[in-house]
Amino acid sequence: MELSSEKYDIVIIGGGCVGSGIALDATLRGYKVILLEKNDFASGASSKSSKLVHGGIRYLEKAIKEFDLAQYNLVKEGLSERAIFLKNAPNFSKKLKINIPIYSYLNLVYTYIGLLFYKLIAKHKSLGKNSFVNKVVSILFSPNIKQENLKGFLSFYDGSFLDSRMIISILQSAVLKGAVVKNYCEVNEFLYDLNNKISGVKYFDKTQNKIYEIEAKVVVNASGANVDNLRVLDNKDSNEILALSSGIHIVVSKEFLKADEGILIPNTSDKRVIFILPYMNHCLIGTTDNKTIYEENPKVKEQEIEYLLKEVNNYFEKHLTKEDILSSWSGIRPLVKNENKSQTQEIVREHLITKSKTNLVSIVGGKWTTYRKMSEDLVNFLIRNNFLEKQKMCETKKYKLFGNHGDIKELEKLMNFYPISKKTKESLLTLYGTACTKVLNLANENKNFELISKDLPYLKVEILYCINYEFVKKPIDFLSRRVGLCFIDKKQSLACVNVVCAEMGKILFWDEEKMLKEQLSCEEYINNYF
Image (cartoon, rainbow, N blue to C red):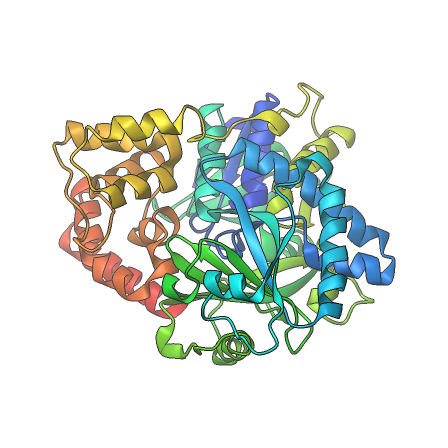
């Protein structure tokens, strides 16, 4: 075991959207921060979202129906944060038109009023006009939509984004300002002072196979679905504050959707909504919402896939089958527990900050869209409760994230000087934003513009870049959460394992035994969880 000589203001446990957001907020305010994640960054629910930046149209319906002010405030906050999100990360997020198929004029009036409220709440932060097109035009946009009794499409705008890329961008921004972030470092013990207050943590670095101790003024538990487990580690009598919900998504060919617009199915058999969305030149469908228990790596269940296929097929002429699914995954949403609500989809996704008797600060709930506000609230809580002395004000409202500086149009012109295909150019811009120049410079220096596979747009040098600048330790980090291939095509991911392992082996000086171990581990992960 090694003792760290450095003392930190904040130790953050959890490298998802909230933990990463806190790291950036606190670092920008001048605090000394270390973030520890027991697996890879974004390996939990933060990479398994519906990829939407939204106010929550579903919550608005409940707010109106039940005169629920909490639901209304959640929508208002979400729409405000949506505007900040899109402005601060324009290269990893964009506005998205979403169409709702309408099958009765009564439903048209009802839905139109709801969308009007949604737009009015957003005020000047609205992303575009709501519109209605008739049946003929709707079928041109989506020829596969069920045509019997179809009146047309009612459309509105929300945002979409690349979730795992956002995490990396937030973390890179924090590191540039002085934060320390470590993946594959599992906190397994809290340290206490003479007054039985938490004074630091003991963590196991899985890649170095070493245990470290570090001291801090405050420890923040932002570990998502794992929050209650860490609270029990601190105090075995802790009450549960989480209600866990599993949500799965499936990915099929873009041909199923045709247009670069989403579709919202408003009425499933259990009164929820399902989204069918464009995602990395594919089509993303989700999500389910079922009570679940904590699992580090949840698997997709057959009945969940059957449920999604059944509900989607009710709205389309050409039916999807299991053979059409290119990839699928399951994530666990950490919702705030509410004893009066029986179903997880009824729980308002507001966030909660709690402090234990030993001063472990935990944050739960919320959603991707409001990660920045949650982070701001958490740092304010630490100052208000005298864990930290007040320094600067929050700066994240107007802080452009890494990879989002500079002119994309100028960058596109510059990329024409490199020997890469149009697909590779698009992929580099999508994944790295303006930071793709660093990838291209590496390729130039190494005189290597070779692809990982002739059927894919990824350069081999991206592996080197991701090891050097994006915290990649294992092949699965690269294939799933850096280039996102596992999330769109399981078979192609498996076909790339050997190439990625060979490249990583050369860079990190793996011996044959280590290489084989990483290959088997990566293949097993892809087979089990996608």
